[in-house]
Length: 442
Ligand SMILES: Cc1ncc(COP(=O)(O)O)c(C=O)c1O
Image (tube, rainbow, N blue to C red):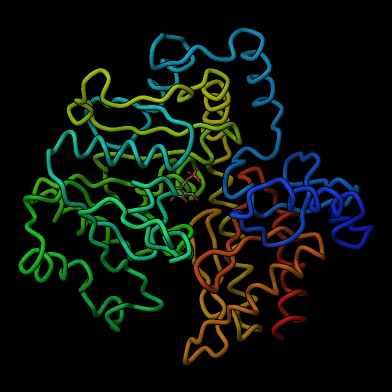
């Protein structure tokens, strides 16, 4: 039987309204909330608010709840570990969950040779650690990152980020030595070229111009890159992009650092999105989906790169034993079938959206891999003028119809449901989305 969202109060409902009022009084105003959803509980893809309304979740709590909300096997692992040990600090002591998870990640990480794993609590911490490790190992001071990139909000990760100026406003000076370069955003090529005739001019430019004019390549520690840009708009670069960029990195002894915080952990149908591009990154940063909602960040690097000394980096809470056990249960579920499901259901979602694109002029671009899918909205397909207001209105209206969506980039909507999503849920999402787009931008 097809399950449908159930909205039986105005939104926000009375209980939600009261809580939002208190939130405004006591909680930091720096958070961005697209719509007034106050969650009480959730299971699978179905989220209940405090007034008993039921929503279909195509956000997975910002691409985090990979195994669906409160998967019974993840909950069981958490409860079992919570009875044994909540915390001891893996930086000063040893415990089995951290060691077992490190072994698992080290063996999963792409590329030959042995790897080592560092643990933190979030995506930003994983990126921050990668940034510091690269400096430690290479003793080089310069880094390249990309326009549109989002790597987190701590000072180092923020310095690598080039997503929205509001994220940097009043926070300068940031970490020096970072040069942002254009990403392969082919729908709006920054060089006004077309793929494949461009022959990846954006990659060639790094060697032919940047490294000849302003940046001595032998002083560059890293190229920091998202395999598929996340917050920037779910931008999928051409198949050869990472291979060619990585070739340049190798030529000059630069570390290729893949930020898989959003694209990793099976979301694209492979454990790591970089596997689609045939590149083995030197360092890989993970978080979000890794522990189904428990806070955990991880960094995997080849053993010879992870050569920093005792005391050079650590975190009190990093590698929390409960989070580690949640991660092990998550990885087991991904390997048993959820990764495959991400590919199958991702194709169904993509096909459905491409079909809808034929009847909705405002859907300028549909792109993605697996369950990392986005639609970019335009006012006019030939001028590609961004339709920001439509995008925002579609998200808000979908919420009123019981479908949870999130934006990305300036004018795109992302679809990043839990990897447990089934065919009926994909079809429900497409049906609500179709109605909403017709109403707002039809
Ligand atoms: C690619 C990427 N890197 C890093 C981060 C930062 O993660 P966190 O918010 O857990 O610090 C994010 C968060 O959206 C992300 O998408």
